[in-house]
Structures are given as structure tokens and as C-alpha cells.
Length: 209
Image (tube, rainbow, N blue to C red; front, side, top):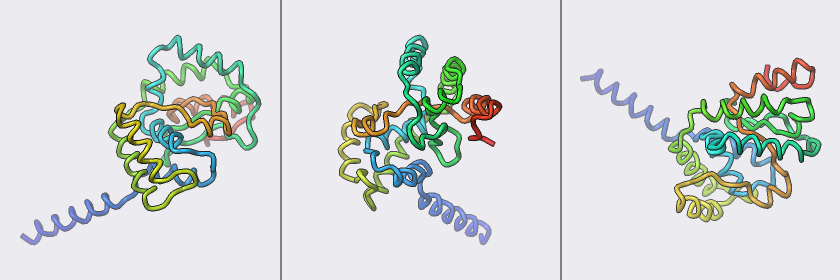
């Protein structure tokens, strides 16, 4: 009887602890967001979408994916001031954005990047339910405290819009596009690491140990 009661208490404590623990995606994102005043709610949504679902939505047509990269590659300017090669999207670093301008400037191979992107999109354990949990957790966090342009009111507005379409992928906000001109490919670290190590062998990158 005592053992059964003790197990019940331990289970209850575990459940309470798990329920109180912050969701890792919004917690990690908000820590980064405080350093970038240009972020809007669409950019938060896109970050969480990529962190939990990878690049699956972008590879339905591999020919179109290749043309998209070729066109973007040909029009890239130099890296922006302080633009990193790799931007992790989750605290555990298992997925991130490989930024095209610094990758190209350091001699990165676009064909190798394309192959890694397609492999990564197929291999990543995309989870729509995990995305929705993270998105809802973000809404709860913003209700407690806004961060820059990110407010609970903006979250509710965007949530209504996205929920009506079953939470699809979205574009960056126009404000963020103007300010940052984002250019990247979403890759699991497993696919990104060989690309970055190739640059490291050329003496041009030390992102991964």
C-alpha cells in the first residue's frame, strides 16, 4: 500500500514538473528574439515551423528546388555585417538555418547544399503536433510579457489567420524582409555539419567542433 502510494506521489510530481517546464522551442526563440528588434509575429511562426518541421514543405518538386537555389545563388550579395554562417533553431542544435551569403562567400558548393537540403527535408522527423504545441506555448509566453513587436494581440491575430488554413508554412514579414533580406536553407545538423566541415578544412569556418 505504501509502495503504491509512493509511486503515485512520484508520478504526480513528475507530471506537475513536466507541465510546468517551458517548451524548448519558444523559450529558445524568445532568448534570440530579444537581440533582433526587426522580428515580427510571422517570423516567429516561421522559426517555430522550421524548428519542428524542417524543410519538408519546400521539396515537393526537386526541379523547382534546384531552380530556386540557382536563382537565389546568382543574386546573393556579400554577407551582412555580423551575419553568421549557421543559425541554430533549437536549443539542442539539431536543426538550423545555413545562411547562403556567408556560405557562398566562404566557397560553399551549391550542389552539395542542394543535395543536403533534399536529404535533410526527407530525414527530419517533422511533427505538426509539436509545432502546434510550441506555437501555443509561445502565445502563453507573450501573454505574460511582450518582446519587441511580438505581443499577445499580434499572436492572436496571426493565429486566427493560420488556424483557418490548418497552420501552413508562411513567408517572412515584409518588415523583416526589408531589414534582413533573409537567405538560407533549413538543414538538420547531421546534413549541415559535413558542409561546414568542408569549409573548415579550407580554413574558413569553425562553426561545429
